[in-house]
Length: 220
Image (cartoon, rainbow, N blue to C red; front, side, top):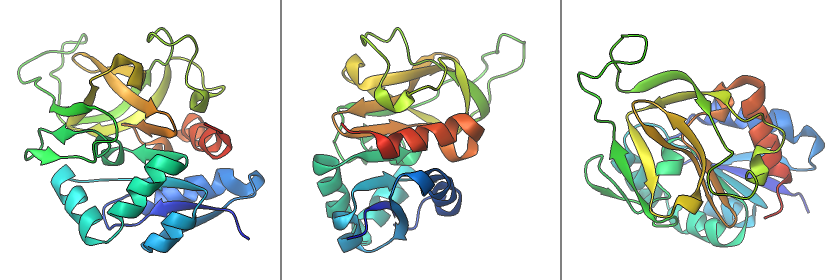
């Protein structure tokens, strides 16, 4: 029986670049990569990637309407699940973006950047959305050691972000990576068999590919 990793296609993700990145690192894993809108294939998959782009309310609605929501919730309870960008924000309880309830898998809120009129250290204004490369730290966050999905990715590596909202987990232990943009906030969150990033690993060169590779080999 073929072992699969399912990239969930509910109409709201950067599916091509995500799936190409996962396929690239899956070559030595024994896993076949499926882009799928079929709940049965998500249920059957060994691992699941939940991407997301656009407004959170649209993403939540499309996940529900596509019939994939229950399969994603089943994955979150039973197998390694990786959320990316809005796919991470959806894991939390609630988003300020259009007052949208999330999946409630990790306690916390999604907050809007409030940076109007504030200046960056170089004197330029903060722009929202944050777009571009930013450093992520995964040590010294109250964990005895970095989350295993970081693997050999150096602390302080740069990743690519595009977002106007950020995650604030209720429990600091669920924050496993942080960055700074006007304030320090969670760039990666995790609980049990779930790992998720605000940034786009598929747009983050070798370090991003390493994260996907580590996820495919992770045994939570």
